[in-house]
Length: 294
Ligand code: GUN
Image (cartoon, rainbow, N blue to C red; front, top):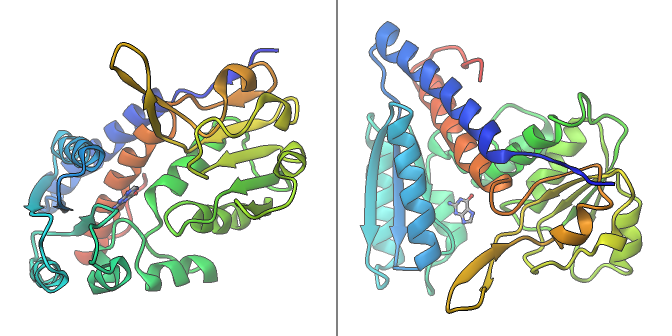
């Protein structure tokens, strides 16, 4: 069997176009242009590349992008002072602080300083709590993208046995909450779980977000299962080049799964498209407008 490839690039392009159309409607009807502030501290190469992609996508969707690049030795106090300025700036509807932050900055304190109404990452404890309680709020972008990708295969996720591999605040925990809200039966497994292969083999929907290159092998996958690979691991690719691989061994999994996301071109593009969705939603909420249809 050869799995259907879930094309994240195509789906993300459709979502970005829908957001751009809503943004044009807002500009024409309300004179409102959503704005996103992107804050990068230090010069981590991967973070620089992600941040550039996010800012470009924001501009392409007809929104404003406010870029803040801070030196690696920026203090936590300086960073929080910038965030407080952005919290008070009416042109800024969303604030994204790229993770990871260089030590000794305490990421939890930085996240808590973002106005929850502008927390387009959905990382603030208030938004995490709202998600856990089933209340409306801003939802983390990568898990939101995973759900949208899974729903291209399954009209409903209700009753599916879902396994989330990984328990980070950015992906694993919020993805657990979102799958539960979709009425899936959800297990969260992690590096300390016993017999990961057996847990994986039970899953109709396997979401791998554990950050270990190609850890999930073909024989860990239930035949016909849907596999969402959140991993983005840069490995040496020969001739001094590097390449990106997921947490799932794609070459093996593609012969067993029913559907699978590739890396790159799966979850990654959807994360950026969902960031645009959150920026649009945040702008509408702050302007007292109804939530957009996207
Ligand atoms: N680092 C890795 N993923 C993310 C993300 O979704 N948002 C932010 N702010 N930083 C990240």
